[in-house]
Image 1 (cartoon, rainbow, N blue to C red):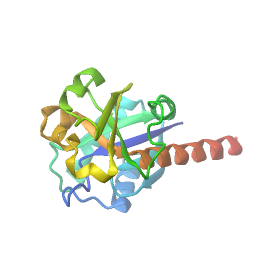
Image 2: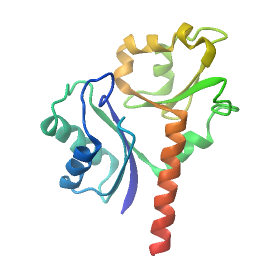
Image 3: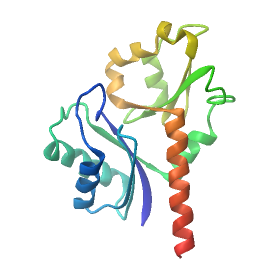
Length: 190
């Protein structure tokens, strides 16, 4: 049984595609997933399954619009392994996320697009925004006191934005903490 991190794109954003985490958990249980943990209502789920990542993605992307009233064009599921999430964290740019009082930092996870192509959607404003490509992720940081002058939200108008899902760095770290706790608990039970 593998533990996976699911990042659901397009639910509970801006008052659209509202899905309660309790109902989402029930839906995933009905689809055969176990050990389900949700974290905040922005589409962060940890599951255990024998299925492969592509199969998990396909099953959930098919089921969500049938189970909930959603604009299915916005819905995508990214399935990460424990190692993939750990790599996003350990391979972060030097200093990224280390000054939360000064910078707002996000991990922009990529789905069906490479970082080099996704980078073309960004037009960072010098002195305010910084973006770095990673493996399956774009690291984005903006100066908190000047965040209203940031150009990072311009990426949302790009067609490439449909292949991205954003998590704050704090959420990304918290998901890693939760997955590590589950892995430790599994080891203790064995």
